Image 1 (tube, rainbow, N blue to C red):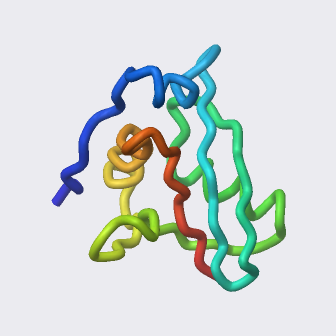
Image 2: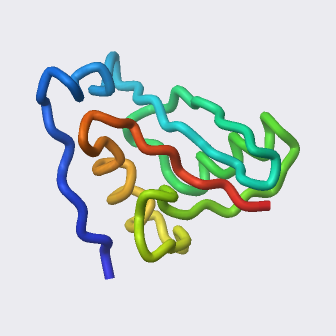
Length: 102
């Protein structure tokens, strides 16, 4: 089932996270290392491409789940769920981080 979230809002508070030149910022929180990273990726990024990018960047095999702000926690097992989360990652003026698990 697709996750139900609010779509991207263009309020002044949230416009700083709007796509620019076809690129967006996705924050990645890795709890096991307590690191927070920012990735500039195309708006059309797929789960496979995103996962490969992190393997290349950090030499870590990460499995991604929704933000720590999402309940219950869920893992991205399909590109459809990942794309839904990407579209709705901006909430209450915040660009919520995706969670990367080792």
